[in-house]
Image (cartoon, rainbow, N blue to C red):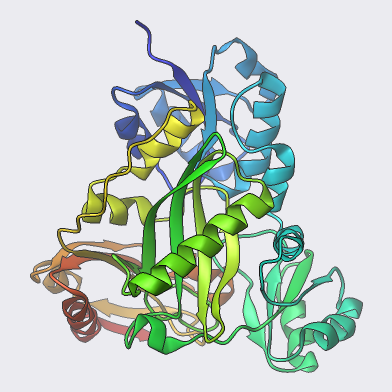
Length: 402
């Protein structure tokens, strides 16, 4: 019996081609849909032919019609809308085009959440500098300025005055932005050493939402750059229930009926508030969930594309798994020194140190979370031990900037 074939629209995202192929074993055959005009695809496509089937869609998306696909998925934020359009034209299961817009357009998403009765920050469109005074007057100060479409906290910042908002807008590439009311968090919910927000990883099949994990976070680096994740989170049972309820309501509000999703939720004094709904697997989350729970979210995404139910066992955490992002301060322009990586790699509890920057590299906080220097992967017996390891990482690594 032939395995069903799932098309994966490839681009930089939350799953590499190798991780997709590994997750597909015994479930389906993978066909990578590759547009060579995309820089990431151009850098990997020539090596993919030895690993799996490749369909070149650079000239036309119509080439997928003869592939006999049973499902379609992408792990890239940038390809969600294109995947939705392809799925609709070819009768395949995926987000509807309106839902694809809702999970990628922060203004439309905020409007839909509000219409569904979910409390959240006031939000106003900023298409040009002249829109700023009215936007700031409506949402109040401090405010959060972010691109209407984007990911990874790129070109996102807090502004405390109209003048600062205008200055930041000039610094950022020209694009539509939104201004949102700043939501203060309650640091006591997650506890000292952890961030005032979490994310919910879920899988939806035929409109039924199943929650897989609540991912804890480390405190943000200014202005809103993520510094790492931990599984399980430190939330109490009551907070966990409240977070899961608001995440599920948000998924229904934006029209998600299928796929693995990543909903970010702020922990505020007034209760959980949705930061944003992402209609795809969250970056780096698959590794954490696999290490902590032995659950493969990439495989779940492929199964959901085939309309197959997924089995989600009750969580049994062996250890606290974490990723710690090595983040430069906002004022850093150039990496001048980076020592101690080999010593850090030999420490108990540290599984892997992945360095992405070299001495001499230029840095720019405006590019968001992905401007980190590297990632430290590790685990510990409990959350206090995780924080001890984070302190050790900061002590062992000798980093200097210009």
